[in-house]
Image (cartoon, rainbow, N blue to C red; front, side, top):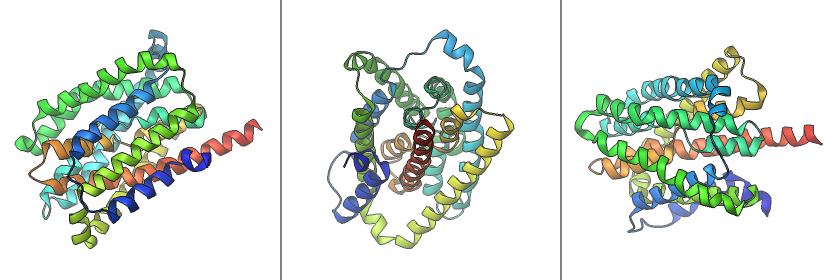
Length: 303
């Protein structure tokens, strides 16, 4: 039972099935997703402290994290999403929001799961979020203009940095174990996927062929990101004790935040959220496979 609870794939698959079996719920999904993301971010920051020495010792990782997140990932995401510009501009808006996001907080979780360098993950996440304060609103405004208010995006980015950082400090006194934190983080992911899929239930069931087409593009994007990130990490001679962390950094954007942004700021084009929540589903499953394999390999070596 504990293996199932700790396995993110079980939560993801359950969320998809349950959300599709239920009719659309009349609830404020976008607001709930924001709360869920803040809980997840707070738990991921629990017990972490960033010192001057951490920044100095991991300065190369910080720079590499920003390059992977806002150069490699953003460029590939925009290139993939551009195929929808001629026919489905609202879907293109969703790709832009996704491309503009910083990395997922799951980068920190990856370090916990694989016993890799937690300081590398925290420095990388901090670097991408600080860069995102400028890059995210500017990039979204350049690409989709007045369709979204860049100041609103800036507000949410800051919100997701400051409040979880403040809340994580008293939480650290509880000294929560990994067997407590990981299931809660997985449950938060379940809620995000459930709300994202359920809020678009009618569109998904009425346009299954189109949804499958976007899904195929989402899978292609993840494969390309894996390939290019592996090449960059090899060229940069990244040590094994941080390779999975930086791989996740290069592949996984904060899809949960992108879902919330689309729901809140692009309400006139609700279908814009589709590439975001499909990316969340695919990347959750990919993340579970990558971190679980590495965790098993590490356990075997330790044995």
